[in-house]
Length: 423
Image 1 (cartoon, rainbow, N blue to C red):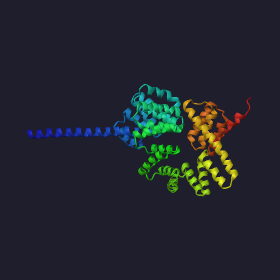
Image 2: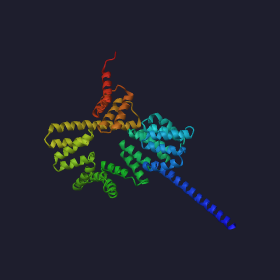
Image 3: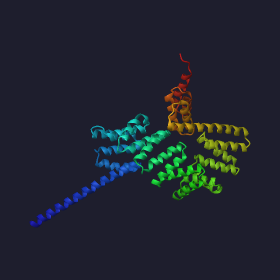
Image 4: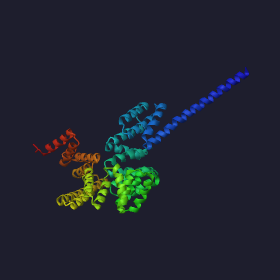
């Protein structure tokens, strides 16, 4: 009897130990997925994030923080309806709002294009020590970058660098902003700092090489491009830029081979088309050169380099009148691009309310097939002058081209009503 009781006590003890081990294993499993979900969302690995969050929501369906993180993952992915569901559930679970929930609602508005309406409230959170201030600054910066609003984007990114100086992302993004503002030296400095903090940024390294090529720093560009070619031998964009490098170095045979390989996968890359056209011209293939240059201009009607080379191509083919027309258009495009660049740069320092300047940038962006940015600048022009004729004309023409007859007619009516004399 004593032995039986001893065995029973041992069995109970062992069962307790096994239950404890199992419970500990479950706890570890759940927290592993929570930590992994947070890391995946931070790094924008959204497929991984969704996998880990599904498991977290199984274990903690009533946890406010889990719901908020799930909302952020959906927001990053543009699934605003799902994000809103998670936030509304978090409101119910928390019996009201808290800072995390409120900030996520505000950041969702930023991604939907309402950055100006909520910017002040979000910056108030940043300046008052909100724990995830970098998330706010990143989301605002991306929204401003989307529409080439370099000044406010630069301010957000610089503040982020102050808060997280060892994070490569704000340097990378600020490099992009300065790149768009034609401040290439500071752009390279920020890109290089991002690469110092995280060498595994092939697109950043490629952009540094492109900037070096654009400013005749061929040796520096070559070092980056040869490293990328070893790491990514099949990447068409790397072949394209290395081909451009070889073209500048007058290694024509290697340049053509690389550029033609890239053209197969990147048939709409303007720099590839222009460099191949120049090789065609050097080799006497004028028809091929003209075809490539016209293709480049179909992608961006304001591409001054393509237009300049087209004029030379037409001149050699004996079409003097067409060549002169192309040169005249090149002069106009060059002046336009200079004005647009100046407007974008001055906008970074002092936002303009001049609808003429805003409209000109918008129309140029539409011509360059940068549709979202172009529409933003055009609608900004209408904000300051609802009857601005060039803007309504540009919008009417654009909507007609894409077959949206209703919107085209709306802007045509604005043109007509604006021309009618006041009664």
